[in-house]
Length: 393
Image: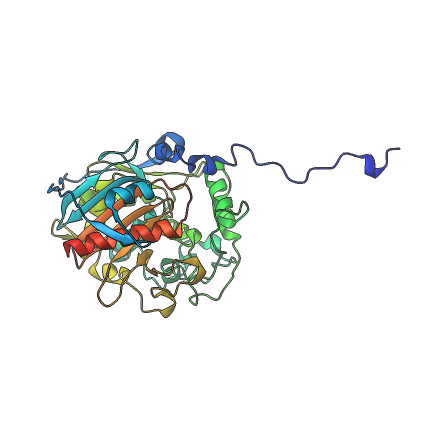
C-alpha cells in the first residue's frame, strides 16, 4: 500500500490559462495601441447608430505652442504626448476644433477609441435623460426597484444616488495589480464568459451606504443594468435613440459586450467612439446639456456633475480610492475650486474627456499607458489640460 506521503499532490487550483489572461494581453504595451482601436475585432459588439443630421465641427487650427510646468521643468504638448503615450488629442474652443493630433500608430479622426470608464460618465448622462423621460422615477429609487435579482445582496437597499456618487459602501478597492481582486475577476468574467451579474451580487458590504467614496466599476455597471430594465431597451439602443442622434456625430459608436449570454454592454467601460464624437459629448456638457438648440441633458444634471455638496466627495477628500487632486460627483471626476469649475471623465490607461464650461473648452485625450493607473502621469496630464484651458480663458 502506498503511503500518503508518496502520493502525488492533488492540485486544488489551476494555473491561469491564456483565456483567463486576455485582459492582461489586450492591455499590454505596445499591443494596446492596436487593441484600443480594434475592440470590435476582439469582442462581440452592439452598434450605437448615428441616425440624426451630421454636423461637422468647425476647424480653426492653432499650433498651441505653449508649455506647462511639471516636476520643476517646462514641457511642451509634444512632450506630454511622448511622456503619457497619447494616441489621440482634440481640443475644442467655442465649439471649434482649435487643435488636433493623432500620435497613435492606429489612430485618426475616424478611428473609434476604447474609452474605458469615460463610459461611466456617458451612462450618467443617459440615466439623467431616462429620469427626464419618466422611465426612472427618482435617484432615490433603489436598485431592487428595477433589478429584483439584487434582493438579499449587499446592494439590497442601495439608491441610484449612491451608485452615481460611488458611495454604495459595497465592494473593495479596485486593485488591478492583484490577480484575484474583484476588478480582475470582473475582467475575467466579462472576457472569459463568466457570470458577471453573479460576481457583482456576491460583492461584500464594506462600509455604511452614503458615508464614504469607493471608486466602483460594480456600482456603474449596475446603473447601466437599471437603465436597461427601466427603459426596456439595451444600453446601445437607448444611447442611439436619446443621445447619439442629437450630437451630429461623425460615425456610429459601439459597445462591446460580455462573452457570456445573455450578452450585455458595460455601462461601466465598453463604449468606443471617435475622438471628435467624444468631444461632442463634452460640448453638450459644456453647453448646459443643449445641442443644436435642443435640451438633451437637463441643465440641473450638468450642474450636479460640476461637484457635490457632500464633504466626502470634495476635491482632496476621496481617500485611498481617488487621487488628491480630484473630487467626485455623478460619475464625473471634479476639479472645482472657487476659480476653476472643470470636470472630467476618466478611463484607465489614460483616457480623458475634460470639460471647462467657464473657458468653453473641451479636451479629449486618448492614451495607451503601460498600466491601468498611474498617479504621476495623471497629474501631469491634468496639469497640461488646465494649462490649455487657462490659455484660452
